[in-house]
Image 1 (cartoon, rainbow, N blue to C red):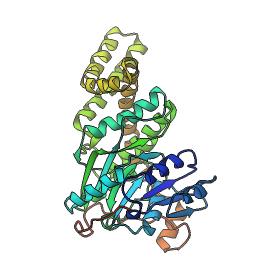
Image 2: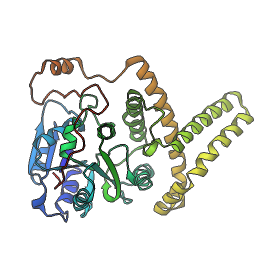
Image 3: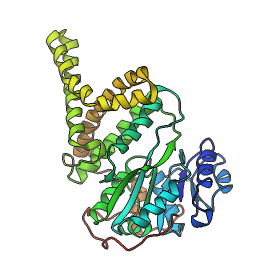
Amino acid sequence: MIVPAYNGPKVLPASLGALEASDLPRTEWELIVVDDASTDGTGHLAEQYADRVVRLDQRPHGPSYARNRGVEVARGEVLVFIDADVTVHPATLRQFCEAFRDAPQEVAAIFGSYDANPPAPGVVSRYRNLYHHYVHHQNPGEAETFWAGCGAVRAAAFRAVGMYNEWHFSRPQVEDIELGHRLRDHGYRILLRPDIQATHLKHWTFRNMVATDLNDRGVPWMRLLIRRGQATESESLNLKRAEKVKTALVALAVGSLALAILRQSLAAFALSVLLIAPVLISNLQLYRFFQEQGGFWFALATVPLNVLYYAINTVAAAWGWILHLTLGDPQPPVAVEAMAELGVDSWPPVPKKLPDSNGPSSPTPGEQSGEPA
């Protein structure tokens, strides 16, 4: 069990306490908390729960780096990753164990879902957390990507593909999605099990929702897909063909609405309405789900947030292409690259650089199963 944490006293008692309350016997799993250079008492708090606390210093390095340091000291054959602001259900760890025990050996990773009971109040928080729940519950089974908020990987497969890419991802972004792509590239399978659930404690504001969707999800995900040559091909979760069509329709609707305002054109306004209508109609099931969870007015309030989501996707796709054409692939700081190339040892360690190739280069899916770490 690996939990990366940065300045986490507000959430760790609930998160680590929930792990302690798991119905999987405590002797069958170990808890490793990685304190990512926190400036408060995160490390001391974690000591009350964890079998081992890995302390990083100097500056925060991000969850990719922190999780990798936790893996380096883990002993289990299955690595379970839980975010610091996530509380597992009593059965979550046991369900992961049973899922790997029953799954074919080529299944290297399994991840779950947020539940439908996020505690953070407010329309934005409830919308964001419930939308994540809804998407995962609509797409059970085989997955192209991985999710590290509540997910598990066979340790042998994780190490075989090079662990998290701490070279490219120095803050929370799409490091778990990228890991999932590499697992698939090497012949492994990934399963989404929505019945394995946890609660997300995060409080979302409108500002951090937009910033996250654009800067930490949309743009880096687009750059990742471009780098892999899959910008138009991926069909995973939010990137299914229907979602791409809805994104395009919203982009055209926004353009038409802007034209209507600039030229005071009734025809352009009518066109924007016609373009947005199919998006709203196709998402009626989603809005009904929101109504079930929070009532009519909550469901109505989520409609503009949902339309904004597609608009942000448009901006992210365009900006991702611009950054790709002008800057190329994301690069680490020059000093880090130089130390990595020279093989300089330091603590915390210099981020490890993955091979340039995206294709299969490591052993075929291993024959590992067992208890979570």
